[in-house]
Amino acid sequence: MRRHLDPTRDSRGQSLVETALVVPLLVLLVLNVVNFGYFFWVTTNLTAASRSATLYAIMGSSTPSASQQLPPSGSSSNVLSVTYLTVQDMTGPLAGPTSASVQVCSPINLNGLNAGVNGSGSGQVSNCVTCTGSTCGSVGTGSPVPSADPEAPTFVLSRVDIVYTFQPLIQGTIFTLPLKASGMCTSGTCTFVRHVEMRSMN
Image (cartoon, rainbow, N blue to C red; front, side, top):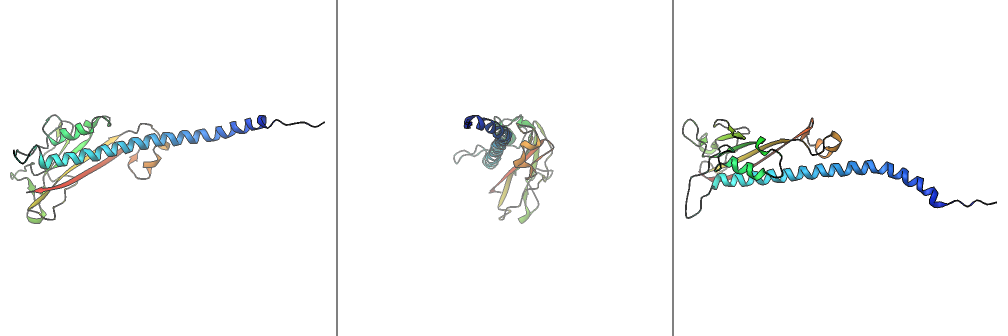
């Protein structure tokens, strides 16, 4: 007698084994994509916030018909300050944007000599103020120190630096693989740093 084997019955066991092998890899891939997408969203938001803050620092609300004083670096509680604008731009996609450190380097920051710049001649750089939430440090040279404009002292560079530390959406070393190699994520937290420099007439 000849036995006829049912090919569908034999393939069922094989499908279960293949599924058991592929599903963990698929879940790992999906969770890494979710984290990477969030990292990209945070980076895009920080880049846009630093750009608009720097533009606001050099122009403020001035228009060709009505020139007004440049906005203060200020704290996040002063609605006219550059720091307030930066925090508002980061609100939404970022969890706890008030914990971000915002350094604003602008000639509006007057030092002890009542000058908005440090140095002289071609080495002039803007004074800086660093704020975290509603707490701001004193006027200084900044860290990192802003660059000197190639045409200083006629022009001066204004700069905004944002340092934002956060926890990934999905915790675990294996789920932050795309950024582990870059050094942005260590010991469960990620630190993103973005800055923009723009020149204005001194």
